[in-house]
Length: 167
Image (cartoon, rainbow, N blue to C red; front, side):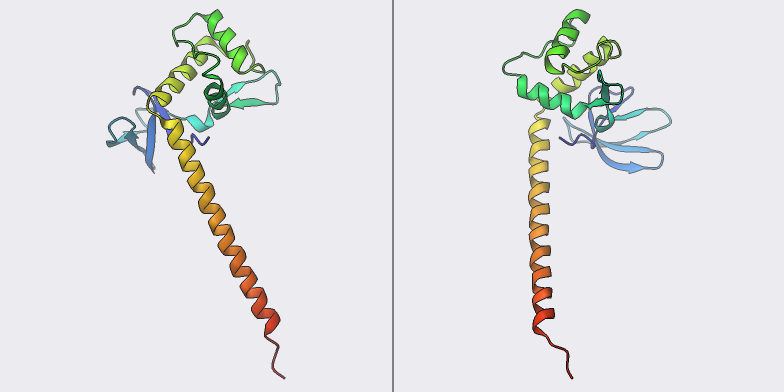
């Protein structure tokens, strides 16, 4: 799951989609309305969801947010997603069930609340389905380009073999 185009911006609610990057900020697209606007980097801080990680029990390892979201999607039928305003104990119990290797000492309840809010926001707007479709399209396109490249290489090789140098 590629979350690189999704960003959380301080002072703005929800998750936004990056439309373009400028030297002094971002042009973002509202997921609900589709409207684009400029947000300056002097006034706001940007957090791309693709760069968000949580601590794991292994000090040399971290867990990507995309991995957490994938597990939450897989387990949403068997394990109900708890409300973001749940107690600290309930949040830790939920995260220990979906991510058993997360570091309970370093991952705070406020971090878990943000993750659940982001997940609910994206799920309500069916963004996960869109991301999967985009990944499948990109994979199919790459596969088609690879097949075209192999065909071209075979044709070039055949020409090189059949053409003999003139004497």
